[in-house]
Image (cartoon, rainbow, N blue to C red; front, side):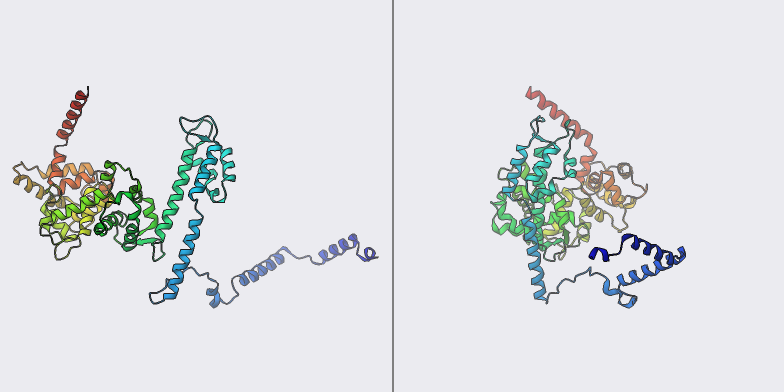
Length: 457
């Protein structure tokens, strides 16, 4: 009976056709109704037609940092950041998981061996990704595989290169988390005091620094931190992005001191090594003849080969931070970093600021003549025939090839890759002498190497 009471499909179709005939409207009427409905629903979605209340629908995008007197909020922020960093740390591969990944990769290597390196195909690579666990999933992508392809005729990648890639990524994340623990503000950068705390607590983990006396720790930390801030904070804001610290090689150099068998040559070339730090601090103590812990202009004039011009040293003490006309250790470190790294843009920026006496943003013929005149006076004192400034000026402009033929900007110096030579000519008699006699020095070097070759035979 129930089925008999239900309307037949043909009856339903007839009624719909009849209704559709009744609802015959023009295309224009349909468009008007569509517009009205759209306006209605859009207005509801935007929070009604009251424009004065629309601000309530703007999502919050700024969260104010707690003030110093808001102790509870500060503690809450610190705890939440600590929990967040702990969670991120747990997401990283530990030593056991890395070892398991290596075994899986080795088990799925695809012959033939390329040189001495085991290789893996894309199919085997995906199989390892499925077995390695969820933490490894982000490493087993087509993009990573394509990045490591290196002209293998079978389209495979090196297992060792891939594993090193994973290790590097894990190390970067571990280091970022470690640095973030010292980011008190939680804004992605470290202040000078934050980086000092990080390095101070890192010292006991670096075997190459075992011999340092604790009384020297503060000087070592100051020496190490200055390199980061000199090169990574050119605007002298007093803070460095954690991202910039990870991107540069300084952290690699610092953590290289974990190697207990680091060669003597590597130690001497590493700014962060104990011998290097002791060398720089020892030079500072030797220059400080009156033992007051500061350097006067006269004391600094004996730096290096004692051939820096008096005019340049005057500019150093005019522009750099001093205390009653004397330089402290931190300012001295900036000075040393600039003179020992004259090829680097940050060092050239430091020296350029001293050469640009009128703060115009460029060096003109007057500026060059002002500084080179001091070189000519030193040559007379040493009984040498002074060189014509006109000749030196022409050589400098030929080396730099500035955009403006009458002005040399800092960018011109950097672009020319001759900034170290130009600055040496203007501020250091020994640097000018080396440039002036470069052909003789090269010939002597060649003669020495030829003599050595004959001795070997």
